[in-house]
Length: 302
Image (cartoon, rainbow, N blue to C red):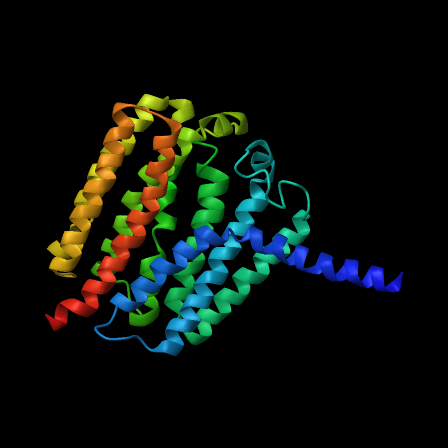
């Protein structure tokens, strides 16, 4: 009996760990950290100081994970109504509000201290402001208020490369703001592609997402228009002298492919095509920033 009880307790422990880990929205946070690391690497000609970069990476991850957990806490009622999010521990009642709030607070505090002590105060304050922008301004205020929530709230989600840049340089430079602008312009077509094939979920949740408030066709048009604006925005690193031909070619090819997805989606809708557009948007941003990084190190050698 004692052995059985101890075995059950041992099995329950990793399950609880997985529940808390799920609150951090690992896939979303991984993309955030990836963009922040790109910002760190682009901030200097060679490699940045590895100790500072490591501390900044961990600190930004902790605060981003804290914001994700807080989002789960605030939206647990909404999450329970949506098939895409009903599995979250908060939506299923597996974690209490107190546990989730304590977890979020602990991660945010640990990340903030790490950034303040081992990186620099500016990065800490910008990262904390990003936390407030996403967890409070976007989640609590904008998301339930306006169908333009993802456009306005996208500013906080666009901050990771600025955080990475500031961690290494100790200042916010125009180059970092260009990287921020690219993610800001990328967010609406990325998210609206998802919202199109999840429109019924959002309708049940009561959130005023664009496909619910303005319809499928209107949203598809906006996906296309924002993709075209994004295409132009991705050329700014080359125009501003941040990058060379390697990045330019990559940006043009990736932009053309994203525009083709958006065009097909606008011309004739299907859930399958919306899913493909959403998935390609993630590939687009990842490869775009990877191309910036390759260009950063290879172009000086050519």
